[in-house]
Length: 180
Image 1: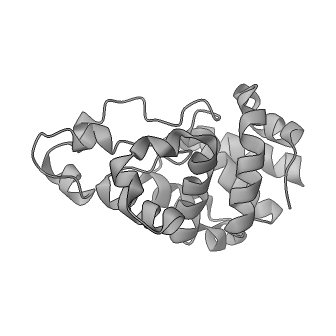
Image 2: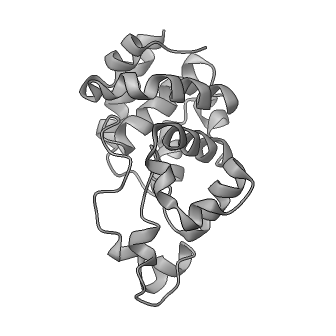
C-alpha cells in the first residue's frame, strides 16, 4: 500500500518539500520490509516523523560525544577510547541508526558488506535513510507490535524509553486518521 506525497504531508506537515524528496524512497523501503498495512505504515511514519523531526534531520543534531567513551560507547560497539567513534557513528537515517555495532549490522543487511563503517554518511541520503529505518523496524520485530497497536513498546525498542512520546502519539493519531 504505497502512500502519496499529499498523505505524507498530512501526516508530517512540517516536512514541506522534503516530503517530495522522500516519498518514493519511503514507499520502496516500506514495501521491501512488509510495512504495508495502514496500522504498520501509521506507526512507522509516526516514529520516523519524530526521530527525523518530520524528515528534516537525517543526522543526529548532538555531536555524538556521549557515544565516544564509557559504558554507552561500549554497548553501542564503539571503542572505549576518545577516538571519535561517537561522532563517526552518531545517529543517522530516519530512525537514527547509532553506534558501530548497529552501523555494521545495517550495512550487512543493506549492502552485504561493511561499507557503512567506512562511509557512515551514506545513511544521510534519502534512499539509505529510508532503507535503514525500514531495516531497523523489521529487525526489531515492529510490524507485529504495530499490528497489535502496542505503540509504547515500539517507542521503547526504537528509543530505549518513552522520550518524545506525546509527539510520537500525536503523529500516530494523525497518521491513523489519514490512512483510515
